[in-house]
Image 1: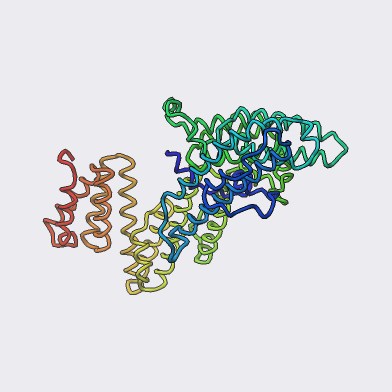
Image 2: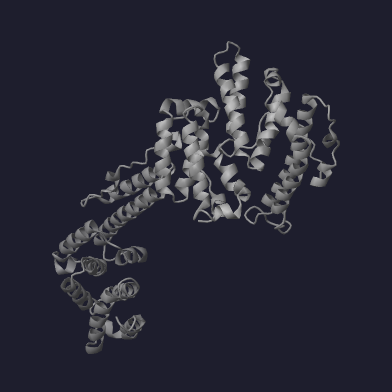
Length: 512
């Protein structure tokens, strides 16, 4: 799987979406930021970059913050242009400029290169200064807002770990305080750091460029390696910092939605062991993500068990029962699939749904058609092309038996003819799966005899022969040899299909 395939993921849970943090979207960003810059060069010429060496911490933090807002405004403008010119969103707009997205990245690179020279050393001192933080004004807050995304941009996970350790200790100390302002500041700072520390999106998706090619070549799937590294660290840190639950959600969902089922289960067990359900729910709620959050909303606590009894369709189900059951299956499955679920489990549910829907369709069609002499074109097509299960095959046999026992003038001949075609295909499939040569021969003989009398069965025989030619040439050859022999030596329905049968036969390899 390529890295870029991950960019299309849309997490279905709001708690997962919340890990796509960015300081630029923060609600505490001051209004009225300068959006007049037309290019990054304009920002680089801004007088704010000429901050005096002896400038106060407050002036340094303010200048850095406002410059970052200007870069953000410029990049937002580029992003909006890209979105507006997306073919899905536009009617008549300018052609999409393929260089705009790269331009946004180049802008950020140029900006941070200068930003690092002028501000980063000063910001590092401000962020680490307890006396400035204790003032509880915008100085330390502004410094933290711009220092964290810079460290993500350069891939400095060690620096983020140091900041996280500091803020975690301050938070633990603050919660013992009687001053609610101290508690709130410590909480806000810790959760702000958590938005960047061990953030899978920032470091694995966007930070992939920071990894050297030599390092990438050490692993067959470097992306997977990075996610697991982050996941294991998150599992350890969760024991001390429950607010990293959102990062755990993101990590778990990325693995889950990209087919790493076993790895997702492995990390899920570690996350569950690291944080108890009550703490996980409270950690999400405290951050204002969801007011009425439930445990099932925490992705890695969601149980993907499903009550399969819903797929048991009674053989005596009435028409109204079938409608009710189909609606119930749709409802239950849609709710289930809205929750984080492994691809393996999703495939299992999809397959069971398909089988149950086939059973329901066969029941409905059989009932409809036995009540009148024939059915609609759609009903007839669905019946003659149905893929049967053991239950539907048994049901159809009973329906055919019941129909043929009626007085001759009451028999629905069309239904009986249509219903036999999928039964013959099912019998051949069962014989093929058994590998019993005699059973295969009997199934082929029965299929050919019926196909020579019925256009419907002949049409289904051609479909099955073509399918087996791709999946099981030996069965295809057994069926085709008998069909061609019948087509050559009789004037039944198969004779008009001799050319098609020969063409399928010729497609088999010589040794078959």
